[in-house]
Figure 1 (cartoon, one colour):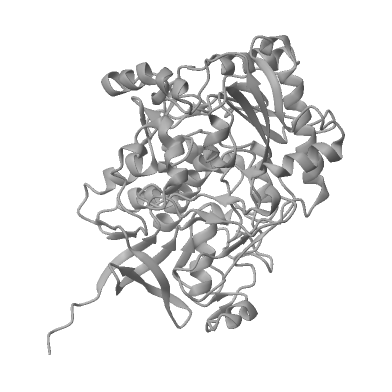
Figure 2 (cartoon, rainbow, N blue to C red; figure 1 turned 180 degrees about the vertical axis):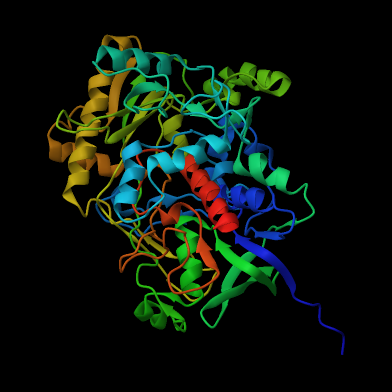
Length: 538
């Protein structure tokens, strides 16, 4: 009989090389006495599309680099078609496929986490970790860092309609800001992005690549983790499948799950950690009854206003539009400059949906094209136009991620349960009215054509709502399914340790008890920065 290959052992095993996993790999490997292994279900980030900032739309069509989930259909939303749920499936995770906007949320978001009993998670506690990650081209200040691995920069505005949006916001009476990440988020302005020298600065580029220069860091790609190995209520390793072969690696110190708000609860449940009844329905032995796993799902529900343009200076997928992009394509190929070197979502705003609100409760994303269905509506984009998307920043509706099968290769069921709380409906409707107010100003006069969605016929609140749901989407910010806290529905404690299981943590956006007021990539990296300190220094 041939000798079996001995099981490999590492001090720390990180499942998932996304925004959080890459940060953890970097920081944990800084201590040379520890070995770190990162498992990633997707491939390496070698595709050129992961470097070209404006090419992020490519990933919406990719099955190789995108988990490409679909949420549970709802008859009144998108005419019964499921909402698409893209998730990055490569080194860097969604930081390698997203629109690169660098947003932290509001001070009150983190103070709220602490008020729920999570000591050490206030804004003042987490601000140093944002700064630690960041290298901002504007330099160091009370709010920004300049020595971190993550490059944050200002873009050059490439589309006239985005300049019109800023002018129109001022004309409509809204504040104009040059920094959404200082003491006041409110206003319209240009987004800073995780872009360096005309290339995307993903978590893989910023954090994982430097870690891989060290001898104590191992990354295994195209390795689907199927189970956390637990003995005596202690995580001791993981099982994964690579090239059809099942393998096991062991952890001397900890197993850390960083799969994100969809995959992390799925893996916990597949491993016997979750609501007992649900696990038994799938024939899974319940090792630890933890009913909060997969609950508390929150997402930024998104609606849009689409307007045809009288000008031809935006982005379109028509032959004429593609020809217009040729000079910028050449400019990018030769100098890494021009429109391809920036995100398409150059401008946006954080505003109050009505005067009774004490802080911004909606976010606007302006786009120089007719954008729907995550950019997959190619026929729509062949027309000249522009759009603005509004999302509900702090939704009160809660959904779930649950198992449809005990097989790790079967996608879990994602039920956003949008508008189960009526407050979200009102904010969304008011947000559409805010966009219309901005679009109606003289700054848009030379651009403005026909409003094709929701359409001028939709004026009453109910008509706006019904029409908005026809093109409803998300901003790709699922969180909350492994909630941090100490109540009965919490999955991890304030140290991000899984309740009831030793040597097991969850470190990613799933631990957020409530959704932050903005894009979730930067906060996820800050969570991982803080987690690394807790792991290394207690």
